[in-house]
Amino acid sequence: MRAWINGQLLDSPATPAVSVLDHGMVVGDGVFETAKVVDGQPFAMTRHLERLSRSAQGLGIGAPDLDAIRSGIEATMEGQELPFGRIRITVTSGPGPLGSPRGDHGDTTVVLTEPCDRPPRETSIVTVPWPRNERGALAGLKTTSYAENALMVEHAHARGASEAVMPNTVGDLCEGTGSNIFYVTDGQLVTPTLASGCLAGITRALVLEWCAGSLDVVERDAPIEVLQTADEIFMAGTTRDVQAVTKVDDRELPAGTVTAEAARLWAENEAKDVDP
Image (cartoon, helix red, strand yellow):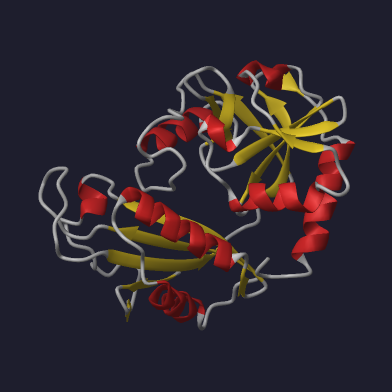
């Protein structure tokens, strides 16, 4: 792993570099992106940086310096063997007081790059009772305020699953803690609308685009219980790509033909363009 902060490449990721008063640590006041690396190349970086900027401006901390971030990405990738890896970009509002009001010392920007293992092609998930607030101040923003996500995914891990999937406040299917969800009913591929409160995932958007000409795919909201009758389910995420779900709660189900075709279309299109 290599780390870069505010224009400086660190000797080690363990080197102390962030102020104890940084608002990202004090109150989780920041935004982030995670992009995958394939064969030494970042994937869909333009989309990730555009979403980072939207999230930062939506949170009110201003547009980040994307040119500087690209320099940080290059610096942290240099010298690493990265057949598969991930890049984590974090922007906080910088040092501030011990409370909710922000300081005026400028943003903190951190880039970390590391090799990692590819997730398995299949996984299991659990549904959780804690809802995502689709009308909350942070709805649709990818912020560092992830404590509830951490709680949910630990709940899933304790039950032998890799991901927790939640409803929104009206009981409709929303998203996973770090992924979007798709399911198949009567041959139709369905994913929740953005109005459900789910994050506008980069992988989600590309699945919708790349599957549109070959599969019957729609955005539609439905109660979370639809997962108990769906014919197929898959998760979509930055490193997961299209990952078949073979167990949801206590229900086992196959990795079906629609999921297989979505995965094939993903692989075919991904190979054509590293920055779609």
